[in-house]
Image (cartoon, rainbow, N blue to C red; front, side):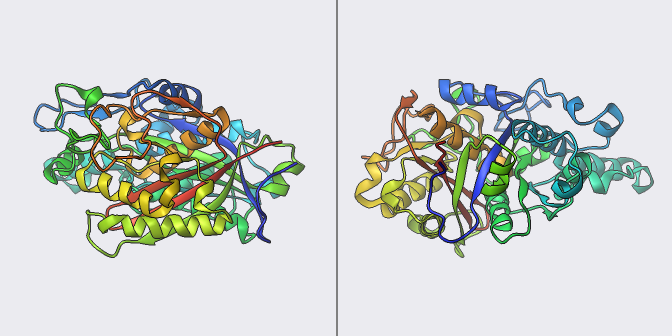
Length: 423
């Protein structure tokens, strides 16, 4: 028996998960890291960070793209797209989809894989080539490696998906938009299956330096694992990170007909704009609250039914307080009963991939009845007050509904609502 209100529309379920993160190169190791309270943040190894005032990151270690790309293809593919392809392949395998889609299934399967920055390493490398060696020495693969839509295009090429195909680009809200719009694509009947998520590979000196110049990054260089401190009084900025996650979203009847294992139902999606400032959130989290209320309304539930929130929670001063105040507004008297997790405390901020990685965490939290901890929350900000931000240790509790929030520079807000699936 399936659960959840139909609201007279096609229903969207999750049948596959894939992830590559600073905690591990697959979903299993990533979840084990989250659930056990392990940190994936280290001093930057991709380059010598000594010129920077923020010298740590959440890096994916031991990554091998050969599962989906041969050596020649890998050299012609930026790291962000490599991460996206590996995560998407894992999600497809988890969903029981074939190595390559064929026939009607191929035509009914679309892709929305976003990236906030696209091929960052390629862009900086090729700009340096142009400056030092001239434009005639630029790679013919420069443009296709750097553009932010290429991961979605390459997923279709690699796996045979012939349905709607595009990329969302909305800074750190990117993969929240990707998943929400993928669900809407299924609901309106333009696809039966969607491969959706986000990827980011921003660990290059110029980009880390750019975020540092904004004073957005933590400078706790003497303690990388303790640097990302959402909701804590000692927070001083976010820790930059790389990673990717992908979900297979599927129309319920289609999933049931092919005997797919259903992991969760995506029951609501809301999006809004702050219309306020290019980096700072609207006072009181007003824009985020509008997105969440819309998502909850579309889910056909009340705020009192929410058990868990995977918070955006980057560890910045204004952002964290605004988000916490938004939860008080959204949940009212129910707010103390909601278990909140700041996943970025364990992996750093994966920018455009954050909403998708948060979705993987939230779905597994519902399935396992385990709330991963918010690391480094040793001295909670007074704004935390009566809220349950799951400090330091995981918590076991039954949960049915989870929200995943992802917000981006420019005032972009997204909320996704997932319901635990019961057979």
